[in-house]
Image (cartoon, one colour):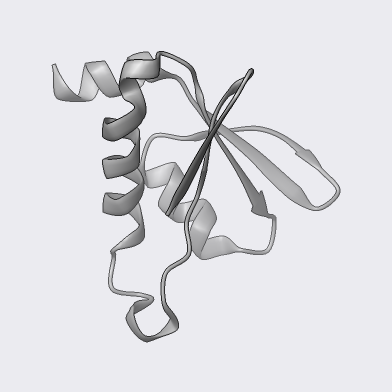
Length: 88
């Protein structure tokens, strides 16, 4: 799991080890990262290859919505207030 703060938001990146893929770990890991960085108050961003269906599903399951596409990459975004609504 990696998080990098940019001027436009916090970009999240995740890699699940091949031996444990398909076990439903990605979405909880993403949600954990959102929780850790929600204090920043900036949107969360993910850039996912458009054919990486597992990652697209995992980020969608964590409340990310598609913002656009560029060069075969899907840009997904989640606003920080989405986290507050889920927890509150």
